[in-house]
Image (cartoon, rainbow over all chains, first blue to last red; front, side):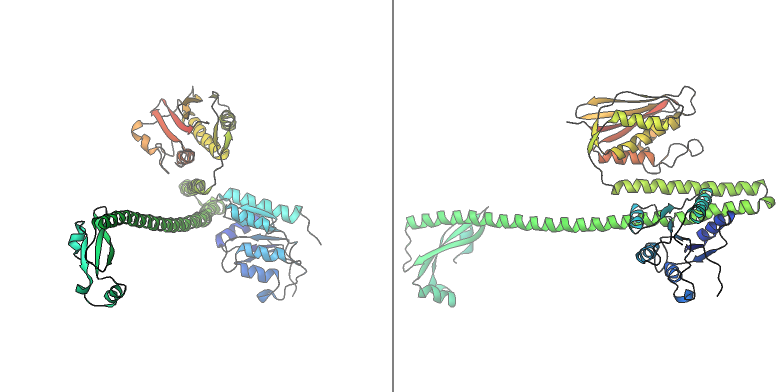
Length: 146
Length: 329
């Protein structure tokens, strides 16, 4: 299966947040190779090439995972834990993007090795700007192992 | 046992063992040679709590014997009563201990629930708000050419209310976090703290700050008190051409009283009681921005430092906010 490389995996259960995130990325032409999953279980299936994603090439991980914390089935913290525990996926940059401003979530995310933790701004302008900055930095500025 | 009424009156009773209803106890008495016995009442606090009995072959009890028996019975009565009291006290203490443990457990549960509540407020209320603001904005952006001024005004109202609600949620969370936060107690240089805060907030404005006595308290929490009070003074006096904000303190017996005074909008003393309530405001949002949480935070922090807050004001002339904190001994 010839697939275009996915550059961003967006794990987000809230359809509106997902739409706004994609809109922000699209403004900077960063949304073309984005794959959206709606819960933690699907995110793990995608990243570990299991279930519906069994045919995916594990040697082509996304360049960035945008991870919401509060999601059905498996939450973002658990996704982060499994990603960072596994040698095959540890190097994938993970940016937690959440509504939670709770210190315990921040601490736990960093303890598990998150690359960045962003509290989603309530205001649209700030939200768009924040998402665009994240996209530009992780996709264009940051370098990951080949 | 003899006549109980007699015993109650404090009269020793002489009992003929043969006259008692037969049974193992009577057999035992007779076997040990007791044909007659005398029961001496044990009375404590006016109440018959038992009897001391002694006996033998004859029904004759010498006065001396009776006196000794009464003396012993009286002492025993006191000892028994005290033992009972002690047992009651112990039982009460144990019950209290159990109750305290129960309440503590209940409080812990309530606290955890509250934490869960504020967590879900922080998370779940923000997401729909972001969508309201975002989609209103998207409508504005994508359909700008087809919207007239009134449509754009309506969109702006939706967005400004979403923003305001976001601010309310943030403030409410900050307030609820205060309750959970562990306060530390260390010496705090109030002059430095107040001047730092004033410098951060004043912009081009002048704030007069007299030297202030130090206190013991939580630097971060007290900083928040100064931020809210100085911020308010600046906000409510901003429209005055000769606006003044002054910070000062006086030392009273056992207490330091700090104040922040401005010559701004002031308030009607009739509503002074409402000032420190959560979400209580004396001004409309279009006059002065705010959510009504700042002074509630001030009161909560000061109360946690065993202090008090109060205010004086005159409409149009200004306000003075006071808080007292225990002086450093």
